[in-house]
Image (cartoon, rainbow, N blue to C red; front, side, top):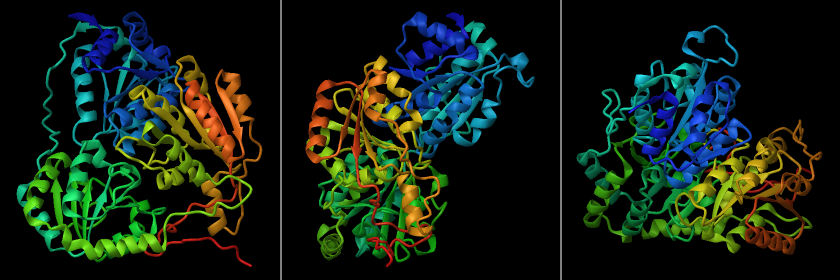
Length: 564
């Protein structure tokens, strides 16, 4: 079939099974948007390019499919870079298509020209500048293959305007084979056997669950392996929901704001079974003290992640689904859960000594209560997105996550402004559940314009704003480490979020009591339209426990006391 380059883009998206794309048009990408109009392809016009990338990201995280966004050249692309970096650090499969000035004008400082490929290189899995229309079908096929295979990630395709107008043969490849890119899916069976033997010999093993489990779709195997072996588990921020909140083997989240039992388990374990984590600094604390008594098994599909930050005793390169299938079979004969009974009892004691909690006595609502209450009222019916800050950590600590992909958050980059547009993508991925964005009064304003997108397209995201009139997490650090010098973190000057939501065509609530919150949430769910619930919470509440930056997991701040 002979067609234009812009037609090829839409044909490729349809062949890849893309159900929805997000974006913002402009001069260099206009040919592609003309084809979107002709094809009646489902596209959501966001009100900012960053939001388009985050929405595609949220869709990918919630669905497990490749998210797609389309932007123009110059500022259109530079606005998208934060979204690309957000997806890259969390290994999210996306294809982002950008327009570019005509090939003859590249390098001339033409209107809206920017070196998009050069800019995107550090924050994508791979990128392309398409120089000839005959290469476009192959490049698009490769982009989707690279995005979803191996360790997932965003792929950027930059298409000059003259290439999108050129006519060519649309010969879309059925399969892709790249000489220099061969993800290794099957783990070495000898190494797997050694790892299982090590688990059988251990006295204090711990399952260290990372986001790679969700990417692989291996959560059910992890649940099976944990139950069969009786090995207790901790989750990273990106792995919440791998085990259900009520699983007796789940200690909770570990790391800077992990709970006491999780951090102590990692500090006292004699064997760590690391499944798909990247040993982030917010998890490890001081590397020379991190799990220093433990031998380490690390399973990851990305060989560059293994041994990158810690020495690994049993490295296994492979897809977690394949590796765990082998481990489950071997564990049936080798591992007896009774062997770890004393270890589990000790960790349960740690949970009893220092459980997650908060003081609910006071005039203002506690943010932790709000999150717990959402969990009590909606539970599995809700998918939870967040922005970044205190509300993110409280959500990770206190929401009862029951299944993988229920929790959508920016982990590696920590992007404020992520939550609302991501929650729009989450709704497209699973419209039967309630899409909730738990946010702060600082974060919500960073992509507030997406209220218009949500109203126009009837995307019923419920934004729960934990409003403390502060950049809360920065204020907390200023309280702990900067003698309460609250430099540029006071947000007392804020809009009326109720009127703001209503001015866009949404609905809004301002609540100050538990009864008001219950009524507002119930009504918001029933009305099925975008809304803001502005919750007035305790201004000075802190996220605890906390491991200071560069500190050790076993030396947590469990409370904050005012100095006399």
